[in-house]
Image 1 (cartoon, rainbow, N blue to C red):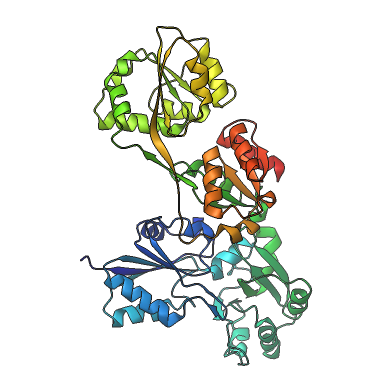
Image 2: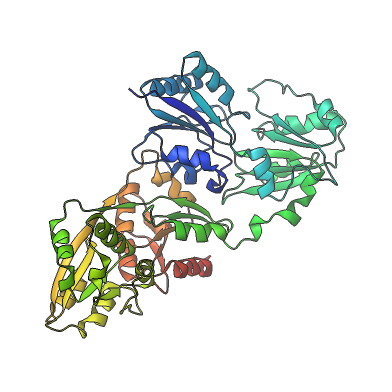
Length: 497
């Protein structure tokens, strides 16, 4: 049996872009993932479908899995020879009880590593325009846990904090806000010292309240914010409006689910993130090449008999060329064959293989593609269509009425993904858009989320008519991009926001 190991990973404050490269690689290769409530959805979406997921989440006094049980589970799974990843919000060793877990693992003979994470005490103020140190305002920063048990006093030396004359960041201190402000005032801090409460930092729902240590409590009573939240005290808080860069981005405040297959989601997710959106990649489908595909192998053996090859998706292009390499079919055998693609995205994939299309219709759908080809077909033509096993029949119906020979061969299957950690029924209430790039992404997304949800409250961004029709079948509100391209989808969201 392989020797197991535990990695204590800091997940940062929520934005998946702040996860370290090492942490991402470990998550994607984990056998078991034990995660906290503060791990962002975008980070949980990186967990492989093959991994066992265990929710050890806790907020304030509410524990799904008590700490001693978490310790036991980590040891137990590692001793089974598994790669165990423990995902903790922020940094495991900063008010995260990571040190206690590490000690327990060591005492029980389990090997471990700690992978530091970006702490919310620095990142959340930064995303709110507050540098925790600044040459003109503060040369020191002090991190304090504001968490306390009910009916207990805060164990904080407020006089020492006041004398430092630097920035103070209180973690997990929202419920203790009145006691914290009272302690600072009693220790002699200037009542006009700026203070900020920062909620859900680095996510689409981040909010801030900025006042002074004498007025922030009243402000929070009148206009509260949800947890998780941190409190920042210091002159640096006055820079918040001036330096809050993220709120200037066009899609700030928008949370978007991307449902494309993992291998295809990067471009759309990247463009949306660059515009300030919080993006959660939840591929609703996975694409798998059909194994022992005798019909396709026979077509490749006789590739020179075809006069046209028609692709209806970038995935079909991938499988086609991957199989050429696997079967050692020489690309020179494609000489003289004409190529057609359903749209610019598929044509781009072909161009990456130095193949440039003879036909790309202006409207990117199967019917338009078929109509663009039908008048070109003669009895001498033979057409190969390597595509999904559930391809739209309109293509072959139209081309089948021509004198050409048509070989419509499934080369890959569209399978439903499954996520052990995912509860979409609750998460959809906090989402602004769900993007759909095919009818199958809609159908399988509904399988993931459940058919009992009221989808009329969810806005689906669809890439074409067939996709939109499927979304509306389930009751989604929909908007549709003008063109069936990723850039057009992004433009559609920008216009609607």
